[in-house]
Image 1 (cartoon, helix red, strand yellow):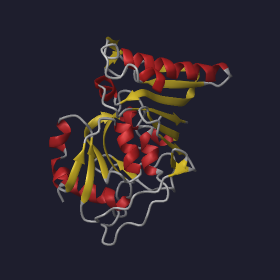
Image 2 (cartoon, helix red, strand yellow):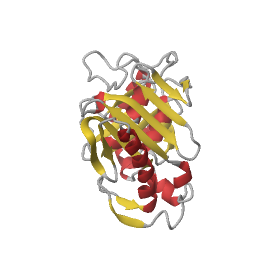
Image 3 (cartoon, one colour):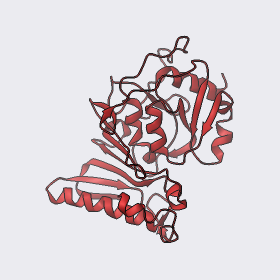
Image 4 (spheres, one colour):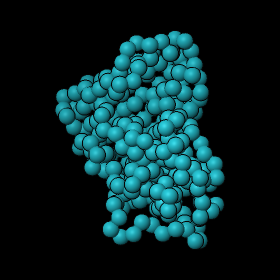
Length: 285
């Protein structure tokens, strides 16, 4: 993938428009070339007798002999960064045993520029370059030190109250990779305050909620949401919670069907106290 995408990143050839993809975005040559690499590999898997379906941003839903399991893949997440030559974009892939994000059993996010790989496997937690994640401890319990935001300009207004309660903001332009860094504690929280495609989050939600070896929260950290609050999405590792991912109202994502049309807001954090703090800040409490 890196050998194909890198020569096209930031070039006129890579930005050449080819039409509209199944997800509704314009398909560029860079998108087409990256997806061709992915489907070549998936075809090789099918040729070995495996049956599955694939949901891709450019092609849409394609069957390789069976409706499930479902492989969800975005060959270039952060494609605007790639097209403009900004070195922060990734390939993301998830394996679902059912139609909803809660059915995810595997998630993988790979930084195409650096080769850094994040993997979450149900029952095995999340790893970074093959090693279990050690979540960075928070410096302060009462304030979000570093907030990540989805990159549309509407996000700035929609998340204004959350921004006011944060010391610094990063808008990195690649959702899955931003969420992966949140799982490791590099960001105290990541927010998409306006509805975005669930498809773009599918591989990274397992990484956030499966983050292993999470340290104890700092002294004085706010409590987790009270009993009776909407449960966080916990695919694919229910019981191995490290991080929390919900919509901006604290509602679970796990029952949402993974399609190119499903949209949701997102608020995720590397631990429950950070998520609770961000949720209250977003609401203005």
